[in-house]
Length: 398
Image 1 (cartoon, helix red, strand yellow):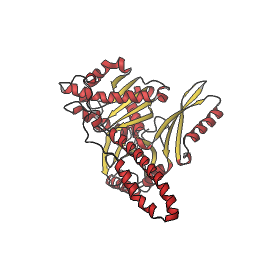
Image 2 (cartoon, one colour; image 1 turned 90 degrees about the horizontal axis):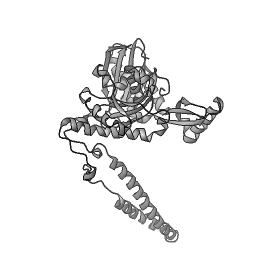
Image 3 (tube, rainbow, N blue to C red; image 1 turned 30 degrees about the vertical axis):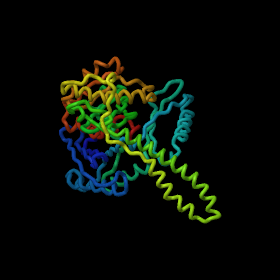
Image 4 (cartoon, rainbow, N blue to C red; image 1 turned 60 degrees about the horizontal axis):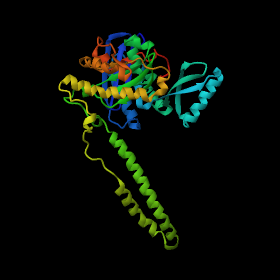
């Protein structure tokens, strides 16, 4: 829980090349201040940590509340740096259950010594116990701890943004503190889907687009939002290169036999041939164009701005439903009761339209119910939640 004195949450934002600072006094929402410091470095290399320390020092020097004093802070890292999973362990007795859990960890993570593992039993019956697990690399944690302490700021808690957003949502809307649900947190150009159980994040994914697509003048083609195609092409090219290299090396075997009697010139001569063979296999992407569905698969084109916003919001609905479908380990704990959505009030008209398809979707989309809060809270839900990061258990806190 946020302490009575001055509290600060620090978030690493690699997508914006910024370090965000969020400070407040106790539970006084009016005292909250938001600030960012840009940095120039590749993410998480040695130069980054120097830039990270520079940002921390600049913030401390510009903030009278620090004035050379040491302070405890909460650090939020991107969701991609933390791994979450779950294990069902046969229920025998407490000691044997823990032994089996440790065996499951060791068999799934060969580099277990390099990892920090938090676990919590979230469901238990006579047949089995369900462990939810949060994992981070020790080296990552240590470098962040060291950088903070070098600036007289001590990272009391390190967690990930999805967990902090869930904590903030549960503080502002107490329904979430006793519910199993999905949180859809929309920012302008990015979004996060989080599976919450009693305010604790058990898993989340990021989407590289946000509510700005709801302001478009026409429906957005999903393949124009981010590059599925680039990933697919990378796999294709890797396979083609490996295949070409294998074929060239097979031919090189004959050359090598000849080289034993005729010298190494044949081996040297095969290198340009290999490079040419590989180069010929590299494929390139055509210019990206919106994907066009056949007419029988197309929905009627909306003729109002509200209709366009709704059509584009259906992309979020699709990813939420896919997130639920693909995470049977989480839904086995309990099915989510609904999807709570945090987005600008101007788009609230969309949710009743979405819920007209609730029977087909098998879940309702509800407003998070925090419109009365100030923009500095609504727009930075994860940073606000960081002030309360120890309120919903220690599973996600390092």
